Image (cartoon, rainbow, N blue to C red):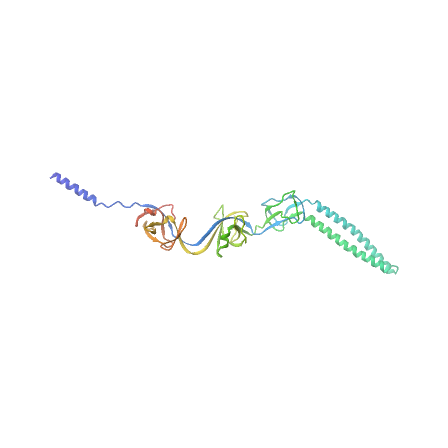
Amino acid sequence: MKPLTLLLGACLLLVACSKQEPPPEPVRPVLSMEVKAEDQQSLGRFAGTIQARYESNLGFRVPGRIARRAVDVGAEVDKGALLAVLDPTDQQNQLRAAQGDLARVQAQFINAQANARRQQELFNRGVGAQAQLDVAQTDLKTTQATLDQARASVDQAKDQLNYAELRTDHPGIVTAWNAEAGQVVTAGQQVVTLARPDIKEAVIDLPAGLAERLPPDVVFLVAAQLDPSVQTTAIVREIEPQAQSATRTRRARLSLTETPPAFRLGTAISVTLSTAIAPRIELPLSALQEVDGKTRIWLLDTQNQTVQPRDITVLSRDADSALIDGGVTPGERIVTAGVNSLKPGQKVKIDEDSPR
C-alpha cells in the first residue's frame, strides 16, 4: 500500500504543477512621442549675415595722394567725423595762386574806380569828353566782373582745399577700406564704405530654383548661429534678378520683423524657410511596423501603461520620416522605438528620456 500511496502523491503533485499560470509578459521599456499636426512646411536652412540696409561708398571729390587714414574698420563715427586726408600741397598752391590773382584784380578795380570818378568830375565841369567817360565806366564794369571772377576762384580753391579732407555726412560704422595711405586716388574713386546701423536686414544666398518658386506667404525664421534662442521672423525685401554664375545662387535681402540687440552688423545667422500648408502628420520611420503587407503603429495608453496596434496608410516617405493619412489624431502618444517586440495589451515602461 505504501508504494501506491507514494505514486498517487506524485501524480497529484504533477497535476497541480500543470495548472500553474504561465509567467507574465515582461515589461518592455519604450520611447514615445505625442502626435502633432504640422501646418508649416520647411523649405530649407541657409546661412547668412546681418548687414545694414543702407551703405555709402565714399570718396574724395578731388584727386591726390592719401596722407593718412583717421579711423579703422569697425569704428563708429558721428556726422562730420574725419575719415581720411589727402596731401594738400596742390590745393594749397591753387589757393595761393587764386589769392594772388584776386589781389591784382582788386588793385585794378581801385584804379578803375578812381579813373571813372575823375572822368565823371571832368565831364560834370564841362571839360571832359563823353567818350572818355564812357571808356572809364566800361573799364570799371569790366574790372568789377573780373574781380567777381577772382573772388569765385578763391572760394573754389578754398573748397578744393576742404575737399582734401574726407568727412561723413551721417553717423555710421566703417565696414571697409578700399585704399591705403600713400595711394594716389582719382576724384570720386571709392575709398571707404560707411554703413548706417539704424536699419538692419538679413542677407542670404538662395539656390536659383528655390528663389524662383518661393510662395508669396513664405516665412523666414532668423536665428543667431552662436545663440539660436535669439531669433525673429523676416519677409523678403528684394531678390537679385540674376543668379551668380559661379554658385548659381541669388542674393536675398530680408526685412526683419524685430531687431534684437544681439543682431549686430556682421552677425552670422541661420535662416529657415517655411510656408503654410494644410495640417498633416509626419511620424518617424522608427514608429512604423510592417506586418503582412500592412503598416501599423503602436498607440500608448499612458494611464494603464499598455500598447495597442493600429493600421495606418502611408502617403510618402523620406530618409527619416513618413507622411501618413489619418489613423491617429493629434494628442495621442505612439511608440517610437521597440515596436518589433511588442504585443497587443502588453505592459510597457516609458523611457525617462522620451518626451512626456
